[in-house]
Image 1 (cartoon, rainbow, N blue to C red):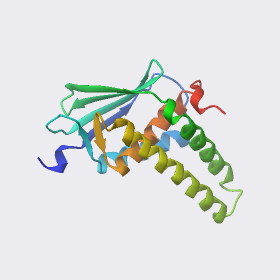
Image 2: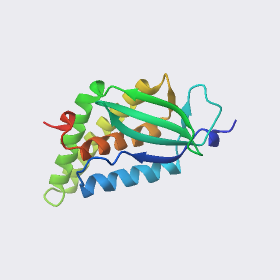
Image 3: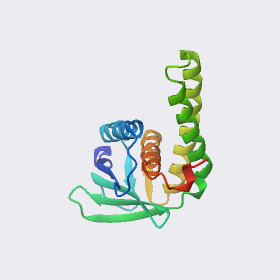
Image 4: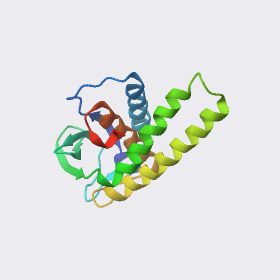
Length: 165
């Protein structure tokens, strides 16, 4: 098997709920492009892909639907978001701080906020890798991009309590 076989070829997010924030949509689009360009995605016990991934919320849990490149179901992995609660709140706050600082603060302030954002992002990506490890192995960059997509999914659902202050 080559590493190319263990990758995502398509990623989609549930769009059943409203909220259209241009910034969130842009982050999501960039994460998808970066993810499809370079990723490591290895479902445990499966012979190889490429794979399609659909991310959605089901009964308050994150559902990752994995299919082969032709759309045949492989596995659905559901995750509780409770372990991510603090990180999602912190990430939401720091992103808002960054957006508020654009145009009002100097580059040093923006760099400091961005360094904090990256730190939270790294911590969340590592937690995601740990939580997925029994079902799917991903590398650090793939986990970072997947966390961005999870954040985008939850941020789009403005009624989701985890992101509210």
